[in-house]
Length: 379
Ligand code: SF4
Image (cartoon, rainbow, N blue to C red; front, side):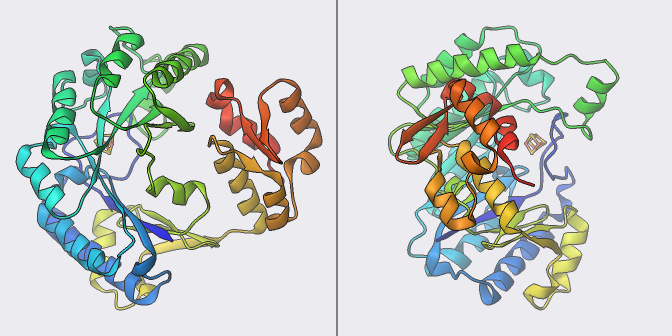
């Protein structure tokens, strides 16, 4: 089974912390539509697996909710008739784009899951992030989507933000009252090449310290558990039946295609990244006659890369890592490859056995997962 990620690289305005690939020049939207369709057709014709094994489609961005309905439909009609096992079609939407007309059209073309970028319920923080919606718009968008018939609605929140004027507890109370069955919550990351990164570097902007961020993470974990959500991955929570199908491809090492400028894909052994430039992507697709002409660069992952990646993605999930399985696949297991670090994590209660040879990181330490996994990597 596999998934397809389609990157829609347009946004109305630039959020100053954002490091994703996007452009605010929407004049190339039609040309982009043709280019995305062509990349999809070339991959479908020449690459494996075929669409009969397609399980999920994810429109991410950028701002997919800004994309012409005709563009979304053109892409979906080339996949869905050939993909009988595709059960999840997600579209990322910004609250300001969620209207009754669009909701109806998205449902009609087969989209059955919305991921709505709420980000915060604190108006000062939304203004600070240059978001186009208000706190009221965010809640209204979720209710409108539920009333229109979306039964799977995920929300995105960002925590560890500066400029808080209401308690995080109040924000979480507002969030859990919404008709959502999934939450993705991310720590604000300060990327060097963003406006925020430059402000922080020259001392013009403070961001919360690690202790404050960790305190918010612990609050988040408690509030979501109390509200009946399962914390199934470091940044993701779901109610029963609300677990994201698409993300499992990333976390389980399964293949996925990346379509669109800046999109990444993985075929099981090789990873690729498409050029992250809209005009270059459109020009390259215009002249492409086979998958070999696609504007992407790839690298084959070594068994060591794949072992390290399996450790990282496994330790980010509640499922954890199965040491016997790692040993069978790679001839490596962390308790043997890095015995001192492994023992230290066990002694400190950071790692715990959850049955057989399967271990996970205790939820209270999940906020440190990337650093913990890195200690267990092999060179
Ligand atoms: S809407 Fe999303 S993708 Fe676009 S600039 Fe803001 S954070 Fe980045």
